[in-house]
Image (tube, rainbow, N blue to C red; front, side, top):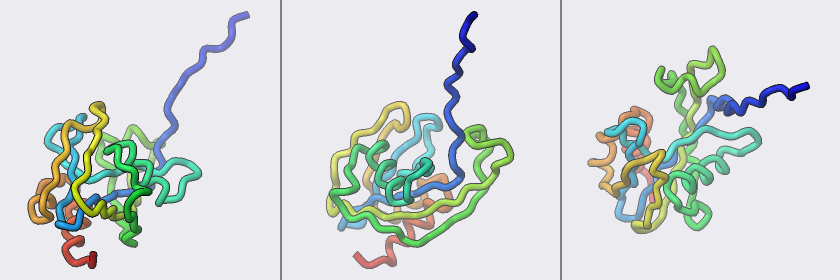
Length: 155
């Protein structure tokens, strides 16, 4: 008798994510361009995995997307929560019927520009830009607002 075929379907994403604004003391912000949608610039983002705290999610995503060790710098929960409708192009990653995500915003001060190592399957390029140039490039309203809020934050 043949064994049943094994399927390796990825688990659905949890509709809870982190947005991490990576910045330095010169008030420059790191932006990365999505490989699956060239021209879509953003800060680091990622969904929470089962069993992780939000801070663990933020640190993991920073490492996965940029190669930066968040533990070597100052990662802070900015206590900003955004709820938004998940873009239709990405909704297949979530369980059927899930239409909204709750995003938790963090900041990571890396003090000065640091080298970035991108995963070419996820991102095409990275740039360090002043706040006023970085914010308008972001396709996400919540990302723009988070970057602009940096101007009002103390170092």
